[in-house]
Image (spheres, rainbow, N blue to C red):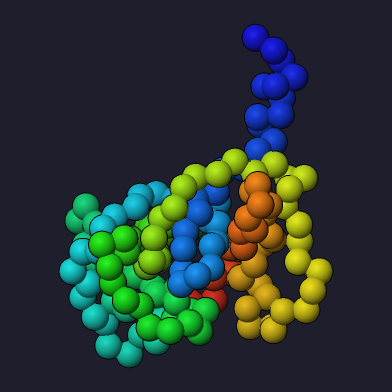
Amino acid sequence: MDMTMNENMTDEVQYIVIRLGEEQYGINIGYVDNIVRMPRITRVPKSQPYYVGVINLRGEVVPVMSLRKRFGLSVDEYTGSTRIIILKLQDQSLVGVIVDEVREVVDLEPSTIETPNFKLDESNASYLAGIGKNGDSLISLLNIENVIGETKTA
């Protein structure tokens, strides 16, 4: 076996590419616990506006947030492609995020990921971990801890 190829493999990071509207985003696969079809969502009163409610996943109650609402996009339209990605955070808690579609899994080498050096509006700047180049397409890589982080209620 060629050892040089094996060394390069460890540097690559896998991202699940999702679609929100016309945009593609990448979520580090290390956070992904599960991907489920849209179940029945139970609404929770007085929660953050981007939380749509909770679902029952294998007997565990998991909060679900709308990434569209979180990013200030138009309201979710649920289609046959809509999925909830169940994310496991560093504190082991689970959170679901609604996405329009799950596209593919891509391997990105660190050399193909650029940190955005342009000015983003402050509220959205922390959501972005970088821009990944996959062939001709660009993927906005999400900083999951920041997207979810400040919304967590203790």
